[in-house]
Image (cartoon, rainbow, N blue to C red):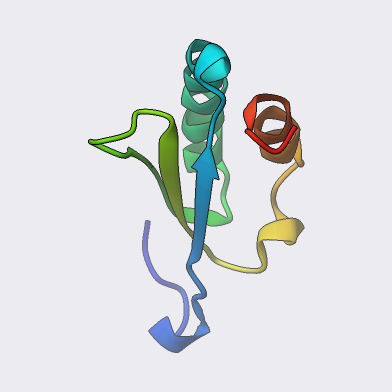
Length: 88
């Protein structure tokens, strides 16, 4: 995707998540669909999901939106994360 404004206007979002081991497969399925969908959204310049090499239940999401995240996400990621995270 191309940059439409000064780079200083872009605010990357970095999220750390730890998933319950028994929910890992479900989480991977949800995140695969979510990542693919997020990358097609016009407001998303970049969306990466990285899995920790030493603990497969830990992930980092790196996202670069054109605008505030709330302005272009439908909220489906938060629902999937809540269902699989250790906090739930």
